[in-house]
Image (tube, rainbow, N blue to C red; front, side):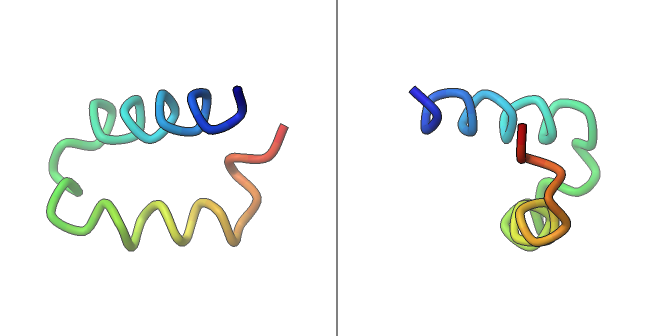
Length: 39
């Protein structure tokens, strides 16, 4: 499902940028608004 794919992408973002783990929610919000998670 798209939800599962999104979760995997979030996990990838966390793994790629572990230093941003503390503000991963903000980074996720920014990614969504910028369209980075859109297909």
